[in-house]
Image (cartoon, rainbow, N blue to C red):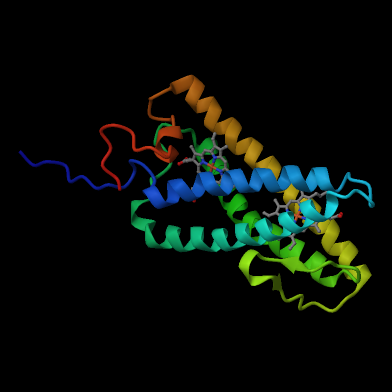
Length: 199
Ligand code: HEM
Ligand code: HEM
């Protein structure tokens, strides 16, 4: 009797991708929350400098992690799980499109934030942990600043909407089909589910 050949594809995401997924998820949600909070602070609020500086440096970190994510996706391309066969056509399409859009927005949002800070005539600079400051390479121009400020805001809230849809889709299949073929949560869970063999 011939056995069906088995591969590791389709079981769970590789461990480095699972760890990176949750680290990025926490950082991005924290950045959206602090962005929303700090823009509501009074100009003379003593904590504003702390929030702005950390928002900027963690935002740059998220951009670097988005590049690491792309590199890992490319490295593990042949091991990435396919969409579950039991999903309807539109569900597969929506899940795929949401993933793609989140990947694009996690790259774009920090760039727009950097462009905003860089073009602002009264910018306090863009700090980055041990590097002190990232050079601000754009010409100072308050009209350009206003455009980047609006684009950064729309991009960040569009990302939040995608995350909301992403979590709603995951929760729907988890609640309807826990442990079944359309429950995708175990494939992204940081701990390896028992019985799985992907690294
Ligand atoms: C994925 C990364 C990022 C996310 C999700 C994010 C999210 C946000 C959000 C939600 C706001 C509030 C917008 C509003 O309600 O007006 C905001 C504001 C801001 N962000 Fe970001 N941000 C990110 C990266 C960055 C980076 C890398 C920088 C700069 C280097 C930056 C600089 C700023 C500044 C200066 C503001 C305040 C704008 C104002 O005063 O109107 N952000 N961000
Ligand atoms: C800012 C927050 C988040 C972002 C940017 C994000 C992004 C992504 C991306 C791009 C993927 C596709 C796999 C990849 O290429 O890495 C993915 C998969 C996944 N995410 Fe998230 N995610 C976030 C939050 C969450 C949360 C809160 C949950 C929990 C409910 C979650 C559960 C999952 C699951 C289960 C998968 C696998 C989906 C599948 O294989 O069909 N994510 N996420």
